[in-house]
Length: 243
Length: 182
Image 1 (spheres, rainbow over the protein chains, first blue to last red):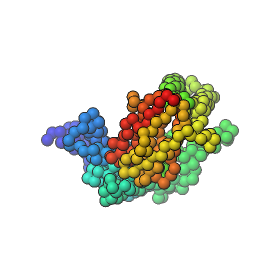
Image 2 (cartoon, each protein chain N blue to C red; image 1 turned 30 degrees about the vertical axis):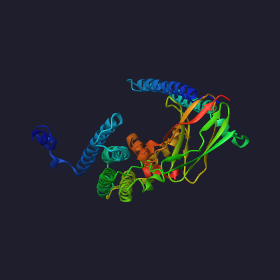
Image 3 (tube, rainbow over the protein chains, first blue to last red; image 1 turned 120 degrees about the vertical axis):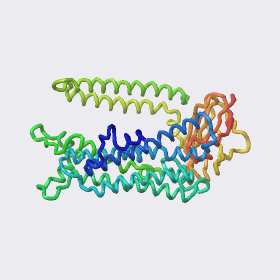
Image 4 (cartoon, chains in turn orange, red; image 1 turned 180 degrees about the horizontal axis):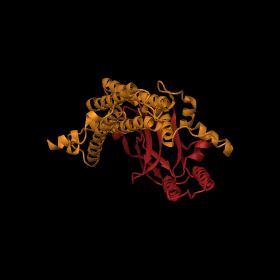
């Protein structure tokens, strides 16, 4: 029990969950879930490597391709997205020195990413739905090979992750631009311009003495610019041109 | 037409050198700007380097474009009449090949016209050592054809190079195309 005790309460009981702020709690939640999904993909990766070297009885060919399909998505969305989102939702308000725009949106963000990943992973595990991650038409709708119910749940899981990612992007940009209640009005448009780089781009064409000052710090600008590409790079969107 | 294996080797060497140069200069740049005191890299030098890399990268693409074996034939295909045409159907994870074996003389230009009845497949020709000679996508509802000039005698296998579900991995037709001296 000492391992479980250390895991839950930290070395020498130094981790005190009740002392954490709401922000720290949800950041930790994102990180823990991200690490659990990381464990999933590590085990899946090892299973696939074993099967590629030698076929084993416990993993059928259909199961192998189902793992191959879910594996990168669980790794990208369940693990990497969770950890990165948790970190950025904490970091942006910290660097901007103002509260997060919406804790409610952050909680929905968490449950949609964690839940969506679990749904599409389970759909693959149970029904062996395996069109691989590009959702390359018309393979995802080939119901001679795949169970339509499994496919529907798989797509549902991906859709939930997309909605969760959308909430994240909204939360980050609103946090950069909004004025917290009772505060002096903040220049939302200019803050956004600085974050997505229009100010910096404009400065390239301005004389040295006329260059505008950056209103957000470099890490916030980097996070904002990265977020611009987060949603369009989702599997549903990235595979659209192929249809 | 240049052999695709030779092109692959040449491009591997060229792009590896290109990448190594980028990595080395980035390492130099990182070292200089992280040293104590004011940055020792002039912005003009940095942007000149980025400009040089861009010019070099684009030039590499332009130069190597002409070494891609099928590009010339693809660009001039409206002027080319193939010596032979083979019509192949793909359905239900199976290649339906012509009844007679596909035999080609060295130097002949051959058209492979492949139609899919259901899913997106790949159509790839592979050498005996399992390296790929060429491949194309076979998309249902579209015409998918490729012209190819065979320069060496040999036998080639057909494989689907596009994932089409677990059943797709068995889509291999051994020794389907034979290239002989005329």
